[in-house]
Length: 500
Image (cartoon, rainbow, N blue to C red; front, side):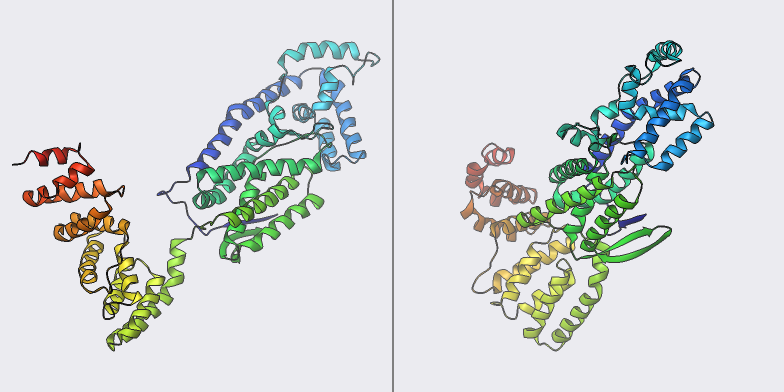
């Protein structure tokens, strides 16, 4: 037994993995709403069955059926399964044997049709009477069998069941184990791909796994079900997405477990090899080739998608911060030495390198800007200003840095200031918030030339409203013609028009 669980990321409640949670809820609802009640019905029928005359007549024939399956090389049953069934019969555990017989659809159907116990059987009349009495208590149809992949001879490709079977489970343990792995891999992929692309890939991976397994298990009897094929697709997608990035895994091999950091992509051939080994040498009650098919489908899907679309793999912010802490400290120390020596020509590129490692660090950005302002035509000066102006401005410190940097940049930048229209709109909002109305108005005078921008009405209204609240009514009225053109029906426009 081999398990490897990534420990790289944690769920972000700022971007909740609601699609992953929804998939888990759907699987649980289907199991507890339909499958578990059906299982309970079989258990109730088994208790009644054990008290009838049927076990003594039917179960020896059922045991012979199992022996024949093993003798014919059936891929479904192993010799120890027959031995366990014989032990149950010997200890009169007839209810458990009935539950096993319930899963043998073909045998059960032949039994009910009178093809197993014919009129020539010495106890036919006794059997027929007991059957007629028990028949009303026996579950008539199987929800699980109907929507699972059938491996009976001649069942065909079953595209609908290839889809529905990935939402079914054989037991509570089967369900819970799959849901844990669905969450562990799912929330990271949902964050990277988006909810609906992630859902589409999950379903395609599950269907691909089901159809791949059918190639190997068709004709063996029984049925296939479970989300593990789709989850295997997620595992492969995870490995391909992170490629050679080193990911921390918790792993368990037989009874040994530990932590290790491996390149993610290395895990793909490891997982596939484990499934192949278990298919050839493991038990026959688990569809290992469904897992292999899911891994194959998921790997191909993600490889093709990443060829067509850039995928930003989520990173563990804590791990990233620890990984960049020392390089950042070294870069800042180097840049500070140049600054202390007043060697601004070398200090600015050094601070630029530090800013590359910490693009939102106010201390670094301010030092880069101050060093670069001595060469106002340099790319460093424009680049430092650009990063400062794009800060989220969620704190007063960020807004004040933007304001002081804007004043300096507007005066010194050569040949002129370089700011996008979107950046200017953002600065107006930030400056109005801290009462820097002259700077906000100066920006709006420039933005008035691009009054077709979708943010222009809201930006202008924010400026005028700020002026009105500051008591600058006459200055606000100077913008009335622009307001009447950009937002004629807004209450601020109508109020300003009424002022004498």
